[in-house]
Image (cartoon, rainbow, N blue to C red; front, top):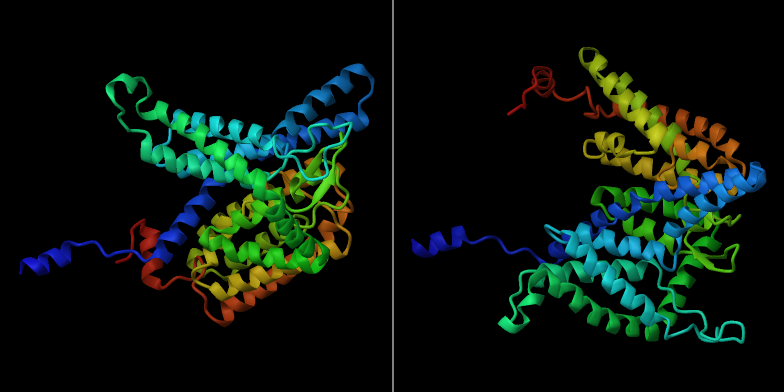
Length: 423
């Protein structure tokens, strides 16, 4: 009996795949914190570019310089962006993180960044640049330092040292540990990053070289990874690491998003096609869901779908719509992922180069219009996708009697109307 009780009380052991998957999901969620800062940088750069292009005189020239300086400080792929991801991931990944977590992350990153300078890129040492060009692992280095900080903080922030070292107990110990660990990490990146970076660059170039097919593959993968929270890994690599462009001051800019705001005319491959889907396709899907609701629920569902449709159209936030049909109609979500890929391919094939700092909604569409190529084409493309989405969703919902909002079983609908939960 005691053995049975022991067995019953013992928690089921998680498999290593389950632990790994949960860890990756947590990392993906932690990436959302630094990404949330990027709209501020995008807005500063966009306003700076507008004033620089249309404003005259010293005052407006200085204003543009100030705004561009502020925005590019965040979007700097060698320092600003990696530091942002380093701090954001450290705070997001560590349980009960506080200010000391961020301090430890900053200490580690500064040490790592300066150590990298001792390992210039092969062949970059010239008379004009005697120290050479340092290795640039970009946001990947920042993410790794953030994760390392979170793990070290979690393990050592309550550590007690011997009495004569008591001043360095707990939280004060973690930045010291990070300084030494990031010295080693900096040396490791300095010695090993060049072949690794070349490999990642080759992969990115292959997909970039595929043109509309590469954009389409990215679009499908992006949507399919959203339900498990892994899309941020894909986004982070292609938006902040893939591809290179020489900026106005001769600096190397990496990533589709950062290259777009740096003025790269070839950027936008992994962003343009989201605009027709988020501004037109998904709002049309929301309309189809509202029209397919049962008469007694249609008013409530229409109000809800109007809200989430406008959210998608204006801001580009799509999860409220997508999760309304993801679990009740996974095949329909698969069609949505495929259509996203088609949109990515079509916009790129037609020469549309558009980008965003937050998401592909109306706000980013208007604010970044001046940086885009053929942005007007997004409207007719989007209207075509709106028709396709409405027809596909309405047909699928009615043909297969899918339990989208407003079409749930009667007992669920009654419970919803009463504000209770069905048993």
